[in-house]
Image: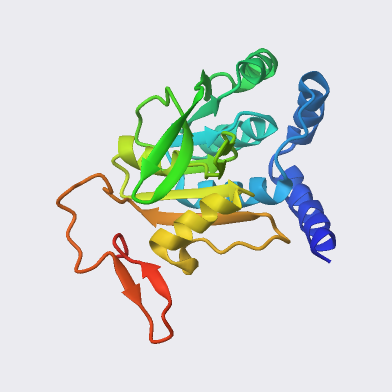
Length: 244
């Protein structure tokens, strides 16, 4: 049942993207032939498109370069044409040198004015009790949208999480971080722990989640809360240090 739901949703989202961005499917097919990548699922791409259309972020951070880069770039160029005051840019991070070379070589020329692909080998990122991985070398901009599709988040200790959304909070002054996670259940779980379940609902049938998160200055030692944890009458613990 889960796979049937996912296939149906991807089919519907693919058709919506094809109607909204004419020609992008041809670009994707050509890119996949040249790069050998399977690409990001269409559910994630459509969630990203909806969020970017709504908020029109000036700086978009893509964590994991690939075919999704083309869809985001096509959307940004469309929005630039429709809204002359909008000058959106995409910083696309790739942690693996081989994939960075493939992505740089095969990015269509027509998208190069809105996309910067950056090599950022993964590095550990820690916040509170959570251990994650980010792309190093992320250029400092006021990102307000993040597509989470990397880097690798497992190591010798087991599963960690993709933490670029929280690193973006470190380097951006945007009051709210919008975004979409492609799979990455551990990342969504951390978001839920910090902000509550309503901040990012996740279903395996969609294998994706969208979020809009108020910026947390979680490195501020003067951050004042009454308690770090709350308990229920049934003994359930919730981490509430950063809840708003």
